[in-house]
Image (cartoon, rainbow, N blue to C red):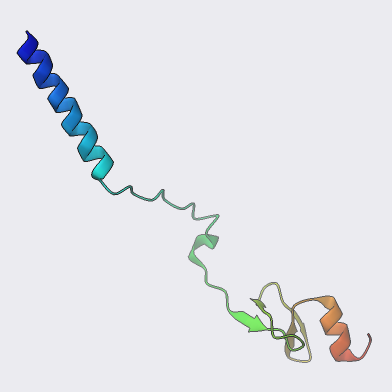
Length: 78
C-alpha cells in the first residue's frame, strides 16, 4: 500500500514539474478589441509632426493635424 501511495505522489510531482516548465500560451486576443485585423495608416501632423491614425486626424487643405488648435494655427485663425 505504501508503494502505491509513493508511486502516486511521484506521478503528481512529475505532472506538476512538467506543467510548470511548459511555456504558457498567450490568451487569444479578442478580434473586436484588436480592430478585427485592420491596419490604419499613420499620418504626421503638419504643425508638430506627431503621428496619429488617419481616422483620428483632422484634415485641412490636404494636410493632417493632430488637434483643432494646430488646424487653426495652420489656417491662421489662432
